Amino acid sequence: MGIAENIKRVQERIEKAALRAGREAEEIRLVAVSKSVETERIIEAVSFGIDTFGENYAQEFREKHDLVEKKLGRKIKWHFIGRLQRNKVKYLLNKTELIHSLDNLSVGEEINKRAEKVGIKVPVLIEVSITDEESKGGLKPEQLEEFLLELGRFSQVDVKGLMTMPPFFDNPEMARPYFKQLRQLRDKLQIRFPNLRELSMGMSGDFEVAIEEGATIVRIGTAIFGARKQHLATN
Image (cartoon, rainbow, N blue to C red; front, side, top):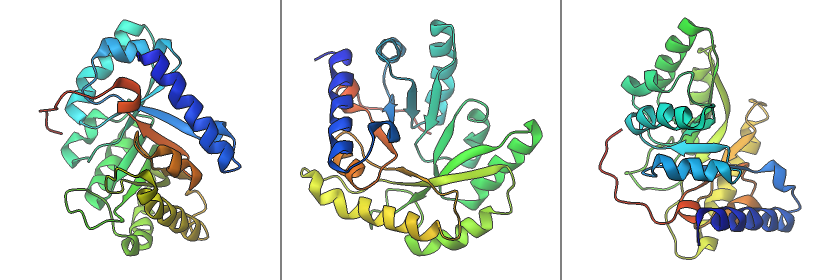
């Protein structure tokens, strides 16, 4: 199937998953993960209704952002969903609608410092690690409350919610406990931090389960663009 058919099928699956959970499909934001995807295919996805794209690598995003928007003749929405290094923050400000992966105070401090200079607030999600996989970033659940209190010092960092990446399973039902745990963490923290509304969780293999467990943002690449080429770039 082509991109148009893939998008239609993904949107139908989102609607059905929302219905099963007693939710409205409009509550769920679809972010098309465009890591390693050519600019022409991103533009094609825009023509079929996709308005938000997620990039994993700051350098690739920097190059792709201007090229895509120049070819389109207008701006589109970008999210940064990869691990973020302090020295790459400058590439994202004023170009991304949401950063999904804050898990480090020094990066938060850098975001705040640069945002103060240009007079903006930067929406972010806190990445949470609910697994023991050291290759993935994120804070442990028990670190979240203290981290959020520390971030409160940064007036230009606007924390919107949480993000997680469970282990990969052939059976998406195996990911359900991880999604459920993130939702429960969010609900508990909302008592003290009421602005924590977003839950970025669920990818091509398990997004329907994530929606059933409360995802407000799903990050879908392969189910839209197909299997991607091996990526050799660094962040």
